[in-house]
Image 1 (cartoon, rainbow, N blue to C red):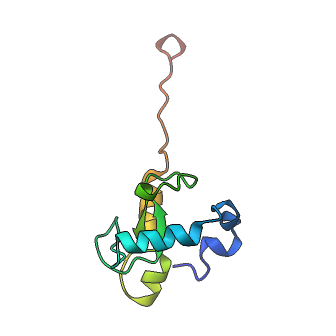
Image 2 (cartoon, rainbow, N blue to C red):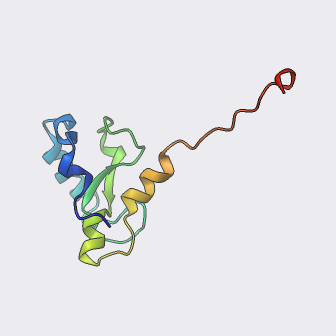
Length: 102
């Protein structure tokens, strides 16, 4: 586990809307236990964009997820946000050579 989260060197905060704190408060009202939408356990610290689009701030796209802080605190064993991000990344596509070029 890395000691420094990606946020430490990221400019991601600059892309968040001005009402981000209100969006977080609204998400807390919808899911007071902050149940992780990925792992199903309470106590998620990060507000996640469920569809993977970091610019889609619609309320139905925002929900809690466990991240590196949960692992460090011993709340969960795995970083759900990292696992979700890995799954959403495109995988390599095998390109087959045209039969005439074989």
